[in-house]
Structures are given as C-alpha cells and as structure tokens.
Length: 68
Image (cartoon, rainbow, N blue to C red; front, top):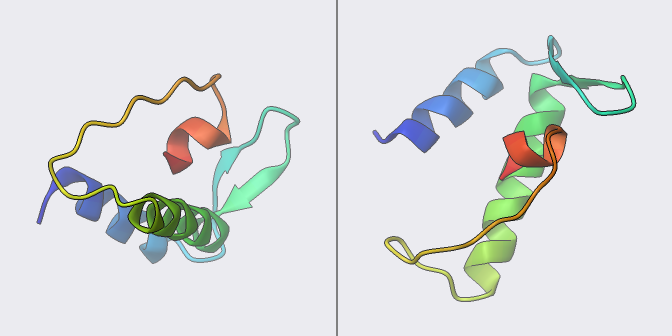
C-alpha cells in the first residue's frame, strides 16, 4: 500500500466526521472528501494519466489541495 492509498483509507474511515474546512469555512466530511478524491482520480485516469506519470498541479491552499 502506498502513501496515497493509506491517506484515502484514513479519510474513508472518518465517514461523516469533519476532516477539514474549505477556504469559506464550510466543513467537509471524510465521506465527501473521499468522493472528491476518487472523482479527481477518475478524471486523471480518463485523461490517460498512468502510474508513474508526472502531473503538475498549481493549487491554492484549501480543500482542492487535499483532494489532489
């Protein structure tokens, strides 16, 4: 299991617990964050990104950073 998989497992285990606040102060649960992470992973997969590929992300501090 790699670090990303461990992180996702930990997030999923939190369920409805709040795991972060977005920049507007809106609480985000573990379930909501896990869904967003998996959606982002699916987007990368659909774009043809494969394991070992390099991807550059430029993101502000906030929930988008945790999702990526």
